[in-house]
Image (cartoon, rainbow, N blue to C red; front, side, top):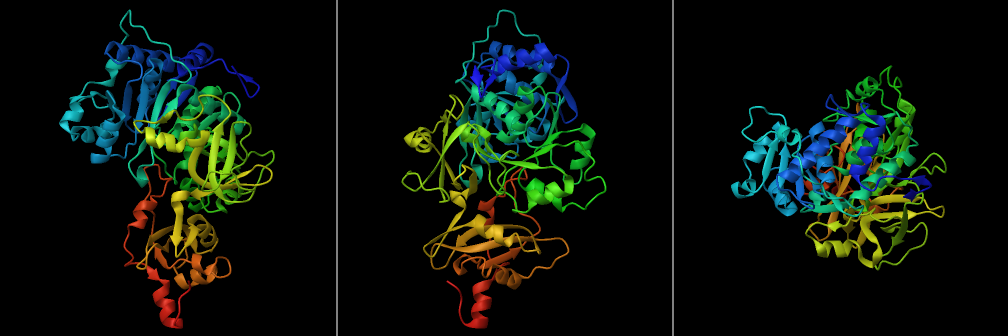
Length: 535
């Protein structure tokens, strides 16, 4: 296969790791939580997992779920499933109770592999649901459940693995759980290989380089940055179980990383750490960034302090993941998510799906330029699939604009717009203005129910270190920078925001439900002082 001027010899994950094992052998491919996995062991152990699953009665298309934090066994389960044509379904390790049971039932998983940290959740599953699963525990020798080691035993003779085609489903990732019941995004086999190739292009990586990550392997970002990118480009990766802002750079130095991925709020957290003489003592060449998830000034502050440029990207799970556009050094456009570089076609559309002019904000629609790149659809949700893929475009639910040079500017999720007294207001626009105030460390803006209908605007603020909270100063700051109807009514000062387990996604739905009793109310204060309140 020819792709972007490069010969691609692999059409499945099995072909990919067989080729790498033959060429790179005992070279370490990834180190997860201190445990090494060579290219050869990845190939041999994943083959054993595939053969043993097949011998146990699993068939092509069956779902094999994992519930665990980052570990080598997670990768072996994934590639073992892929090699027999089964569908790996990594579950968010933060799921509990009804959320976990819903996701397991919806996936139709026949196997669940879990770690000791999640064993209690498995114990508490509905007995009928648990009884229908083949269960394997990876790291508790005292567990009453079968051990994962059984899947690493020598495979039975005579077991045959069916061939896997590029368009066969290989992965289900559940997404959107913070705004409603999660949807399972079904991803074809070739899509993951294409993501690895995009990674190599986007970050101009070289064979032998190393990627460091703390992202969880039940999310698309870690799958693509920390596994598929290094695998497709003869690199290695080091993956830790959890992010630590205070230990991050020491871990980077220890492993000799050249590429890092502290996306979203992690970048801000690193910039808020006390400055250190060793801030630039590392081998990092480039960092992966996503603009508009963090204050606008953070990428430049990160570059100046740590000496590491950020290449900002745009992507989503339904579109084959990350790096659909990238803001590369050649043709760099400040504040943008870059251009598609021959991977996708972009349309910015109005509410009718019709294209708008350059510079006008609308919904981001995408169309792949290669087969088997985007999702097959949502698992068990044909109506949602048809809605997302209508008119031969993937409707992302994201808002953005494109300039005359084709650079994409992500504005925010449609769900992050606020309807106030007949006006549609971008939460990100208000956050960008408030985030420039020297007393604001981080800010999140949400819509909260108004007593007169629609929404009022509420800003949650983490004060910058060494500053005091003054809502009147923030209101004054907004004056002249925002239209009066965009100035928040409520300000609430907090120590942190509720975040997803990745520590990169702020759970806005939780903030929206918080009562206003601890919030400063502009209309009450200024209305009493001046006898009026702004529209």
